[in-house]
Length: 385
Image (cartoon, rainbow, N blue to C red; front, side):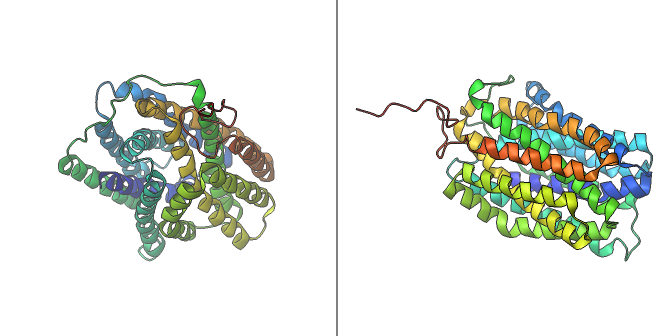
């Protein structure tokens, strides 16, 4: 219940910010593609510094840090609309992102600790569906009443930030601290045998930027999608997660992580290549929906790590994994933002090339990953005589 409420609280603020951010940047602040790229790089800096979470945990419990991080996210979103200039938007973006990324780091650790391995893919799928329900509420409200009631950025950002703060207060008052079943290492954990997990995580960060930054920018800048139209696209994406994320989680549990990731990466190669040459706004919208649909497959990276990890390593590895994820996330928005000014087509072709790299890595995942069998290159145990 606590994990589900945390997921709802996070999405109420982040989904509102994400829905409005590109339009606020273009229409409210007057930013160009290069400035949007820099803003996205700033947004990813806290993710790059996520390894510092493990040192914060020397001072407080993971559950406490999760609530504090949600509160920072809410405050950052709530004040965004009141500062419609480039540098202020950079500052509020950083504050919002600090809360978001530190929450996500701790949340991933708590999920892998609290959910049993046997049911983890299915339960993670259900949590995605719950979060998608919160997203659906946000997108629906914005899509239905943005123009009807002539909403502005200030009111909308503040409203959803306040809702998140209310849920954080409830979580703080209603739920006791959960006991750690396995005491976690209170230092950064980096192990050679987790190298494939690190590589998959790095490529996942690169892939995410193509969708969150440049696919969204394509919809707004090239095809002129307005706030309510972007919200409608998000509604469709969210409906998919509500309907299919639990099923996708169950399928990952049945067919294995490597097969799920292969399907995702093959699909992304086609989607990114199509982005490069799409000229019809309806076709672009279809690609955007298909692109988002593949995100549920990322459950497989989490459960792959859960199977190969020493239980004591989960908290110490979560921060390092987020940092790896955001190395690409810090570099790609600003560098690809400059490429965008020259050729948006090239941005998406580079994305397709990264998806090819991810596909190659997926072939190294064993059919049944476990401690000692982290990759297909690991020595096989001797058969019992």
